[in-house]
Image (cartoon, rainbow, N blue to C red; front, side, top):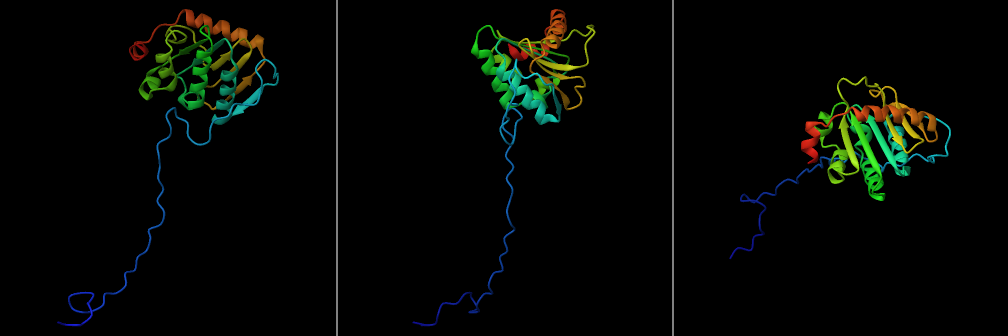
Length: 210
């Protein structure tokens, strides 16, 4: 029997040491959470509906989302949204959709009415407010602006009888937040109601919400 030490290969020669170099760290990109919101939790603006009199100028998506969330969370009776296409960058946010759901479930008479010009993008993307409307069909109502109605080019959110998020140019991420402006809200509420009375159901929305 041979007492020779075991060799590292068939020829009895030692193999060279392996030079292993780590390729470094790998980044893992998880999809954004449902509702379009990623990053830190959206926080509401620190102003009280019906008390804060100063007009807040908003520049950029984040301030607009923050003010929209504050108005929705503090509404107690009515929310009216006049929008070109449900603006997913603004309203398809988890915190905002959840706040709308809490508002609607807080009292059976609470109403969220949404009047929009074009529903195709919202339907195609599965907008969070459309999912909510499917769950709460009796008090979350969505209609399409009549094509012959002389529509205002602005977009706005009305909260009760004094809160307003106004965006004169919807294509731009800017606007104004009003927490105590009953005169302006009454004027826009009349405008909204008149447009609502002439609005029509949308076949795309109808098939989605049934």
